[in-house]
Length: 124
Image (cartoon, rainbow, N blue to C red; front, side, top):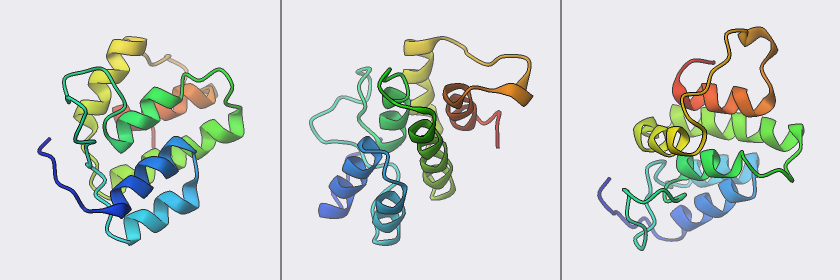
């Protein structure tokens, strides 16, 4: 992804994603934040949370997050994708961190599995 600086809205988006704040994510997107923003100091090939959707994938493994917070990440992932976020780079990080991950029974997904599935395009 090429680096494009949209100013404070991109930084606000990254901060809101990191803090699983759905309302702030939506406000940043409405305010013009780029759903494909890439931190200028991050190399896209590095396995780091360098884009908003990569931040979602990175954060969902945090053992301190509860199901409500993971559910917020599901909403954030849907919002980012609806706004045009490219899932390819997030999925590179997801496969690197967690492997190819999707259980057969999608009726009883954990909150983590639901977020992964949304980014992978397997869960609505």
